[in-house]
Image 1: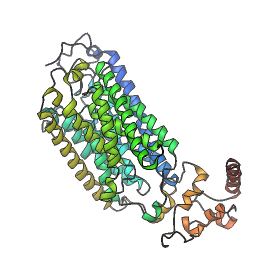
Image 2 (image 1 turned 60 degrees about the vertical axis):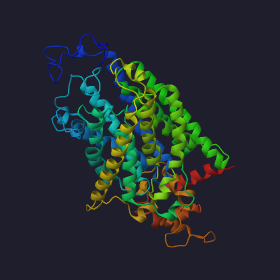
Image 3 (image 1 turned 180 degrees about the vertical axis):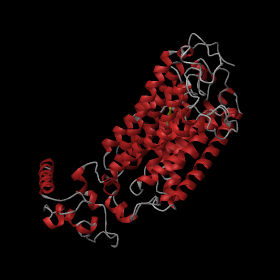
Image 4 (image 1 turned 90 degrees about the vertical axis):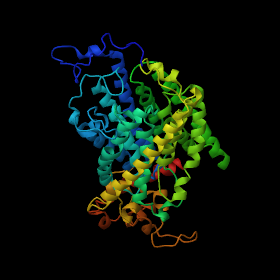
Length: 528
């Protein structure tokens, strides 16, 4: 059941799987140009989320691995764009497959994908829908964002190229099937009537559980290197959060697949959930330290936005307030789970994405309202949750949460395990590389150039063969294993013999010594 057609002047007649022949007729006649423009803009907004994640992860990491986190997020976008074009879209959304689990290759390379209405909405063409979903561009963009979330698992000890190999097969075997379940025309969750607006399952639970599985296979960071650990750049964390917030309005607002009232409601609900999630999180942090935390505000905001992803197009504004407070509290405590299970989820992807996605989906089973769903002018007659006496909806939501959680964790762990056993593709960097930092070991470039050899970058790294006692003085040269660095800490220029041919550390020659001395003078001036 649906409303009478409120889209373009002409309703699609269903005579061609491509929407018609563009040489004989105008295929734009089936759609409103305003809706198409809106989704294109939303897709561009979602793209901002990927560097936003890079900045967020970079700020949360230590400075010696800061640039590697940005590189991982951006490189994963390249991998996903290829995968989605190659076969990802077909595996997730081909309407020729009817098994309910995964699509087929009928739309390999975007074949048979042009001007017909999309699987997600009759308001936009399938070609635009495919671009939106690689958002993750918007469905493609959806997949790219999900991959960027997952790569947080490599923080400070993972090799980058094996991670990109993992991302390709993960998108094929994990993301695409789950997207097919809930968004595909023949998916089992779709036919059940599971309510997942913008990706609580395919995006949030999948990213959280996949990151947890990857972290488990990768192993914990070296304990001695974790002494006095803290995020190295809170300003960068805040910038990344703001980028994510901006992009999330396109992510959730665009999932209405049209410039309509449901899109507006989704944006309102997203903001409410984010802000009340932030308030709940910082209050919980304040009770421990009696100080307000900027990192806590960012974490609460992101958790709220994650919870709004599956729920913002289904629930009312007052329910979004309750969702935000609940998510902030639950996810704050969920950050402790990694210590109980001893899995080093360095970026708290499981707590802030996996758990928050579960909370949002659970809320749909209780607070979903049919009059919110019908605001797009297309989806009328869909039942709400418990508040509208649809008692079975909550059970369907719980079953869906359990299926996505188990499947994404087990398959992601299996993929990571197999890749790790392939010669040359071991996931973990060496202990020496971890000591040096992923920027130097994997990239040969640095987020801050000469700054990375100073202060906490060295002082936080005790020698591997020394006991962790407070009165033990660790020689500076052993802290990083590079004699030139200890000389620079003492204000000395590296000797000519040490400087020659030292390409690995990027230190050598008078030019570097002069630059270091200049930086020292500037720092002394700032220190007063």
